[in-house]
Image 1 (tube, rainbow, N blue to C red):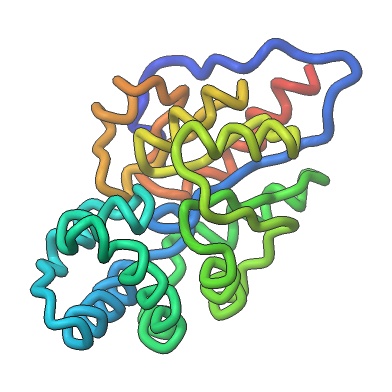
Image 2: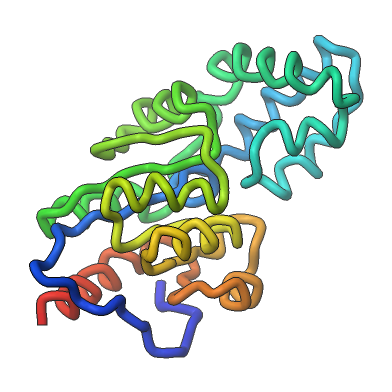
Length: 223
């Protein structure tokens, strides 16, 4: 898809020597449509605990850490146990129903085709993130879990990422902390205006347009 952002892309200032290409990706609603799986896991948690949870509302705001969402439904002193139990039941309920978003596999492959490294940096519990990726046949070089917003930036900086791709304003903030270019997609809860307002450098409708954008970005770095 063509970019929904009509402003020219601002590339980071070139470094000397030029760092190898490293691109970070968020997981939920960037690479993976995990809404069906997350909904199933929350329904199971609700049935087990007897706590009523509006699953439709939950999946409309995927992105922040699990504990942040659970705090809307459980008293504060029950959130840690609820989070532990959710993570335990997640593999049995959430992996199979979730699907790869359009362009996800191709985008990771595009990084590799350019000789780069693809990493996933996500707020999701790392073992469950890896289960999603393995189930869908998406094979990044590295997966880092349990990080949200600005904390993602620390991992991105550690791995030398020049680009971070996400669907949430928190992902934009993470890219900023890392000094990486923020490439945002509108497949998650945040629309193009929100993402641009948060400081995204480029906004795409989905990942189908990312390989072509990345090729242009890398050509610009090499120029």
